[in-house]
Image 1 (cartoon, rainbow, N blue to C red):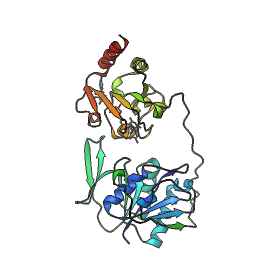
Image 2: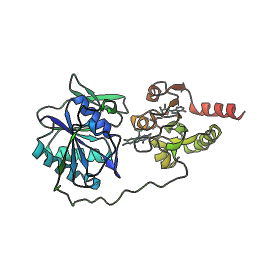
Image 3: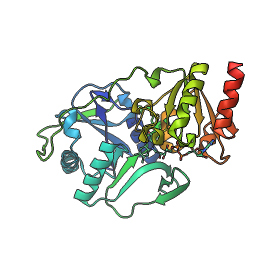
Image 4: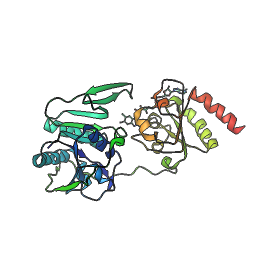
Length: 312
Ligand SMILES: Cc1cc2nc3c(=O)[nH]c(=O)nc-3n(C[C@H](O)[C@H](O)[C@H](O)COP(=O)(O)OP(=O)(O)OC[C@H]3O[C@@H](n4cnc5c(N)ncnc54)[C@H](O)[C@@H]3O)c2cc1C
């Protein structure tokens, strides 16, 4: 039977929203969809897939890529080889995808962000969406995909029938690596995911000495300061203030992005803000494609002007 196998991502019993992108790409591929889940009950619309394959093992078993490859091999034996094996483009998804492709000799396309149905071509980006590559798989082999978060969830739709559920028992578990525990990041006083107004600074801020002036502006505007990854990596702001795929996903009423170019890893974390205002000296910066309001200007001049107006 021709089908796509989705390896769902579950963290601490929660069905990750990025799984909807895996479901969405399968809808685009026009494939019957089986979703592989660890045992447990999950809150999501099960009618979006044709079948659910429950593995008699906890989610920690899914965190070892050798286990994933073994489980997929077992499913292929009983159900037939899938046409596609779909993972999320996350740290665990890419790891398991690489192992699965390597062990079985399947082709892999990572970080898929688009699919051209007519040409059967997958798209992935280079240099923060400045250049795209198109890929096609050749031959009869199953293909492994990792799917970029936010790229396909709009295509995830309810099917007419409820899914059938099967379970996989006697799962082969590798002892080469053991999951120890999840470690929470250190709690700080401010939770940027709860803020209504975020003033976010990017690498364009220039250097650490400029940060206090932006904190002051944030204070005047009753905003909370956050940043893009380079600002956090340089330790100009704490890690808890990072917006993006490896930071926090935020949905404030207003997101004021100053000196941020708009790389997809950043956009994925803030694109659902009610109002996005971007200030950047480069009129071609990708952030302007997502902004409701944009100002092409030096961010320091805008900062000083705003301070003058709001203080005065
Ligand atoms: C696995 C992975 C995970 C990642 N996770 C994240 C993440 O969670 N969050 C994140 O943000 N990034 C993340 N990144 C990094 C991401 O790819 C980009 O490198 C990063 O978002 C760029 O940050 P930036 O926009 O601040 O810097 P840049 O891309 O360097 O952009 C700086 C911008 O400032 C503008 N500028 C410069 N000076 C001024 C000025 N005086 N006035 C106005 N504008 C000015 C420039 O025109 C430019 O557009 C991740 C990358 C990887 C590979």
